[in-house]
Image (cartoon, rainbow, N blue to C red; front, side, top):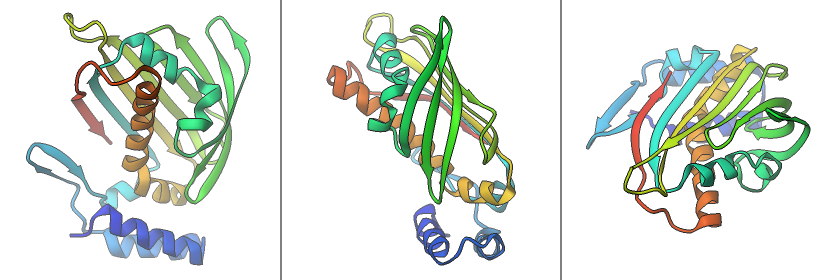
Length: 218
């Protein structure tokens, strides 16, 4: 049974040789039509790509996690869009403008292998509970949503909170979706980890170990 790491190498190699949609999709279909969806080992969910996954143009990822940082700590980092390019994977540039009482607009350049996308997001802020970024004018996708919700953590540990992290998008092109789907889980995990690492850099070690409460992918 092939795992994602092996597949990454094959896809990257194929993309280096050609960006022909026909060639890439034929290789994808032939290699992964029979790969299983998920398995569980010692209670840990492990995801694998299936043929149905590759045909999806829209994807959703939602994870709820208890972390050892306050709502204010998390909000401060997640809402710091001007500095995303310094610590968020694949973000090459981030500029904020059109600020108002509810948030602002942000122009971002995101390098997502093998694409580079320039888009404008509307960022809504509700301190310290919500940071929501929405885009409907991207060249590659119909919509893109990143949403962070923060709620109180353990009663006896004030320096803790529950993160509800959501990513949803739909590409305009099935070809672009097929390529993006290969890296979907990896990128969602890297994004979330990047924010946690930045909070740790600014505020020091967490008060408790993180605990995943729920995790869904579709």
